[in-house]
Length: 593
Image 1 (cartoon, helix red, strand yellow):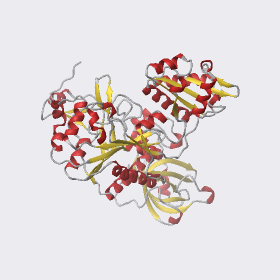
Image 2 (cartoon, rainbow, N blue to C red; image 1 turned 135 degrees about the vertical axis):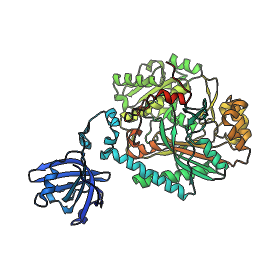
Image 3 (cartoon, rainbow, N blue to C red; image 1 turned 180 degrees about the horizontal axis):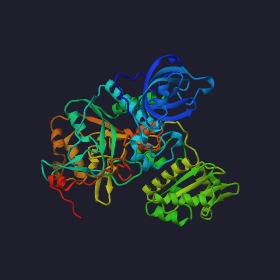
Image 4 (tube, one colour; image 1 turned 90 degrees about the vertical axis):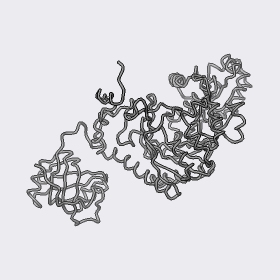
């Protein structure tokens, strides 16, 4: 028979009592983490969201309560009234924040029982599959190490909201049921019952609504918003995710940088106590590819790339010469001290580079006897010396070459750079390197679609000096776009927007979007641009990923209360699931077998 909670009110949580509370009568409530019967005394570790407190049931204090404690098992739900005592010095537990005290129980109420959980809920005992944990996520979240990132996420959200409120931003909720405007990932579609044959889309971002809010005169907007993207399966991605979304009127890039840097420095300091200097460094998109191979460089370590196309042209190595003749490039990566790598190591690295499209990975070890490499016979002493000097290489180093089209070379060596740094322990822990990446191309040519597409999105403004190039050399047009990178991960991105209708229509035209299609998809935006739209711009941060980085989580799933699997499924609720035929009929739908 279970007890009632009536007449009993919790006075403290299980993580706050200290030695200064000795002698205080308290009421605690929570779950049994563990029960230990030491003959005369029964000890229970009582757990709630805030921590664990040891409860002592002593037959000399209350025999009835002590007897009742004999039935307790793991995860039973209790309310306990008792007095705070200091533990004997040899019984102090330094692993617990409450480890100096214990509560001697005078009253016990059993509020609910529990089946035996499918896995241990004590952190140090857990060794189970993620699939089982996600199926019983409500139990998984009881574990302190799993609850901790969720609480951290809450604190980070509070900090962000407070900062933006103080900067004059207004939090506005934008629609979840909206119009499908596919110019990126696939939309999640929602059929309308009251308008048969028509569909809503779940928002991939609030992009157009936040621009409309600037046109409405709201001046500064933000929200922590839910977004949805029906993407192909990728590791550590979620079909629904959270953004810190911001937009400002009457601003340029420098204004956005100033607000964002204030937000990020405040978040870092108030959540993990880390101070970072601002303004953050800036690199252009071209500089990132040139030096690091990727447009989200991790600058916590060196291993920068170097183009050697002109130098290797003077060699007799046919592969390099053919690539250069076809308009490709050759780049090298010098890895200090890694001439010790074995042939198997080099074969593994070659296979790794192949994943990024590299057709091969040439290498040279610098030893006391000079070059050790299959390439050595194709290079004269003069070319060898020029290469070594250009790369800053010395005895004991190894350098790698990739020769191909620029995008293959940059991606392969950029990923190899990261792989070597991780493998060799070159990345300093608890270091936070932030930088802006700027001057992205506005457009890139999609060979599959046979047209230019937006590198970010079609509402990004071109740099003013480049507007004339839209009709003559669109690939050369630079965007007024910017990404913020933290430790090699893009945590946010944004741009100054098109606020003149003629420029927006020109961008649509270059992208192959006809006037009719533009009106059909974006007519409401184009019309709004006719009514005095102010210059405006903004940014959005992937809140899940940002919280994961700051909290030290290995996956964004760890900072989401109920995450989906890599296949976009919920193991807890078994979503997505089939629905009744009657529900489909109401929507005017049927499934084809």
